[in-house]
Structure formats: C-alpha cells, structure tokens
Length: 135
Image (cartoon, rainbow, N blue to C red; front, side, top):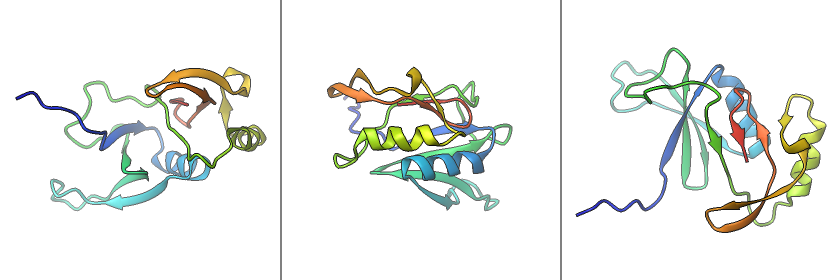
C-alpha cells in the first residue's frame, strides 16, 4: 500500500546562529521556543525547536548538525510560507516589521498576491537572520 501523507510534523533549518533564529521567530512570528533531548541522542545534548500550531521547526547549528541530516544542510536555503491566524491583520504585521531596522523585507515591504496551497492569498515577504525567505 502506498503511504499517504497526512500533514507535516516538522522541518529542520540549519542556522548560522541558533539564538538569533530563535529570537527572530519568537519575536516576529509568535512561535514558541523549546529545548528537548532526542531519545536517539545518548549524550543528552539539548536541541532547540520552534513550535507553531501542530508543527515545529528543529534548529541545527551549522557545523554541528544532528544526524541524519539533509545532504546539503546550509543556512539560508529555505523558502517557507506560513499562514497567520484569521484575526491577525497583515497590515499591522507589515507596519511593525517596517519599523524594525533589523528585519529585511522583500517586494519593497508591500503586501502582494500569490497562490498558496489553498488558492489566492495575500503575502508579505521577509528574510530571517540566515536569509531564508519567509512568506
């Protein structure tokens, strides 16, 4: 029988600076940071993750990635699109991000229309500390 994917459990971002990545995603996207020890990691090494909804992003420090890892695990190679809660006005997010000199906006910081998994959507593009494209 063919496996049928139900949902995404987690993905991994390789980071130049895990602490900077945690700060960005918790401050600007409201994610929750946690530490955990994988049952596989017998040495008790703490790992970092970002949680949102029913998913999480595991964070690997470049050069100290946990195995197994992507064949080419590099910071700044991801292009991720997140949905915000229905009650969040994208214009408010846009205004807040434009005021933060440390945030790099794309598309001149404008809200643009794109096509996502559910059809037409409004998008705002920003770069995380490693240059990953975040929509």
